Length: 105
Image (cartoon, rainbow, N blue to C red):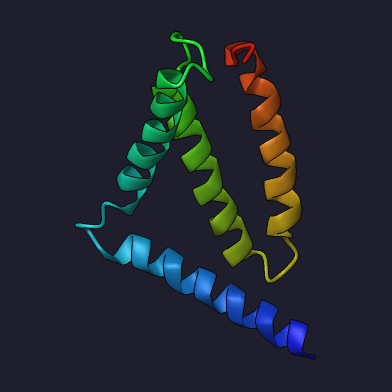
């Protein structure tokens, strides 16, 4: 019963987050998230963990677009979409996609 309440509450919060994103014209959350992810990748390049030619811009937009899409799917699916399962699979896909850019540290 508690898990069901948590799930319903989480979906409601997700829907509120989606509405907030659409209702606030000055909302820069998406672009802030892209910039934050870019900084993470750039930091990894600076530390020598990723190669210099890592497509930072493209990866950043791809990852954040996909995460926002997952939130939208979850909010619209009436609990049929399982975000944790999706995020785990997506994370594995992204990790495997980044292997060519990783250095041999």
